[in-house]
Length: 143
Image (tube, rainbow, N blue to C red; front, side, top):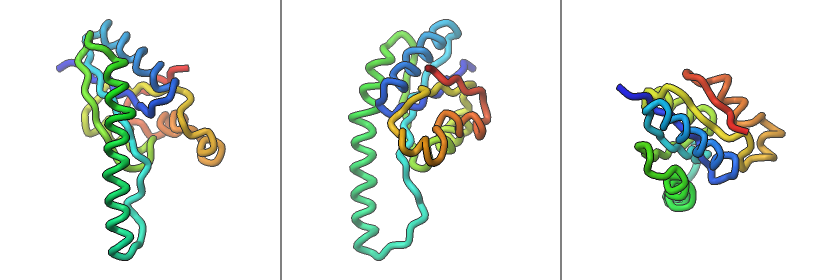
């Protein structure tokens, strides 16, 4: 079975560099690439019925945005020289990527060093840094 490389994408320049680097590595090794976007989303909120309906509509909008503004452009960036697929996940970015790595039995994760969450990095640490702590497979952080 061929290796699968998981690439965390968020539309940032850092994630574009990670896509290109992962594709280059996949060409050398015969791996396929799985592009992933983790939509920051907590399952645990207490709401009334009207709020739940609004939350569901927001989730649907976020999924559509992730597909059209992040995953589809990333798939175009990856090109067609290696097999490329996409996946979305809801949750916290680092843990979500680690969960996807287990679920899809990937051999390595690639992520850009700088994404779209500068304020969050200051408060909670970077996604790349947190991912390196929880990942079940090696993580390559692309500068």
